[in-house]
Amino acid sequence: MPVNNRAANDADARLERELAGLKAQYERLRDDKVRAEQDLTHLQGQLAELEARAKAEYGTSEPAELEALLARKREENGKLVAAYREHIATVRRDLEAVENAFDGA
Image (tube, rainbow, N blue to C red):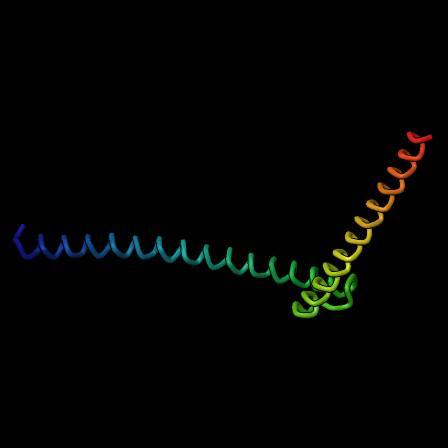
């Protein structure tokens, strides 16, 4: 076989291998695209469900409004815990007073 034919055959073989590799890459990319589209559809459905739930439970699904509501709830919880802490301290003091009165009697 002449050198030119061998070089041409080698070049053809390289091109065929490259084409096969490119086809495989295309198939992987196409599969990735399909999965990404499915994921997007699934996540959009989840987002719609969560927005509907937030609207039903909190009256809004706007992130800024939900953050403000959360801040108010945290402040309220802080106040409730402080009041309960004070109530427990009062009960403890009253109990100690009763115990002291009983011990002194």
